[in-house]
Image (cartoon, rainbow, N blue to C red):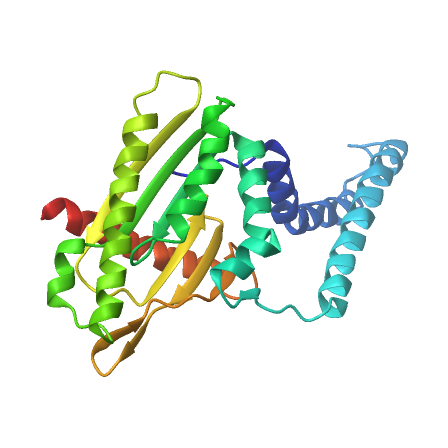
Length: 267
């Protein structure tokens, strides 16, 4: 589902993209009006029409120079990093984005790729229940992808106890997701919650959570001697149109999720 922009975001995006073309148009007008014969347009009209155009052009040029100055002098940005899921939650960054997106649009689209989803699902579920129980007229569209519990027999983990632990957590999470769907999807209230669970049978190269196709919390999985060593716990935060190829990362994440969805439906 495509993310809707707020009115402010639309206006800001339009003005940012149109300022340079507008400057060209105004400059051409100021230049060309000087050569219009006086028997066509009076000298007073030229003078009166040029002032507002010149002032507008000056403001746009100042804004362009200000943007250049700001970009040159702004401090070097670093990619936000969280060493583990607990650090991400404690930072408040995820919760801030979650609440802001809901406040702006009343609809939140969440996409998650995980192994057992043991951390992601329980936290997201608790956040959603806070809104659903109070029936705050919001809509959640959740797409989940997790390692198929039936595939664990064909995968080699770093040790058997690690494998059993992961399997138990995955089965418990899967059951909890189904219970949640039964509790909330059929309720006839102003708030809506649509949950879709897909399963895959291979080891993805990453895991993460994508909010409204704009904010991606992404981490990497690990292999060791052809065995699943770790699902990883660290996260980087990528944002659409950031300085760290955020848009490209989001595009890759969505392509993998689409592949998992299509593969899941075909099986």
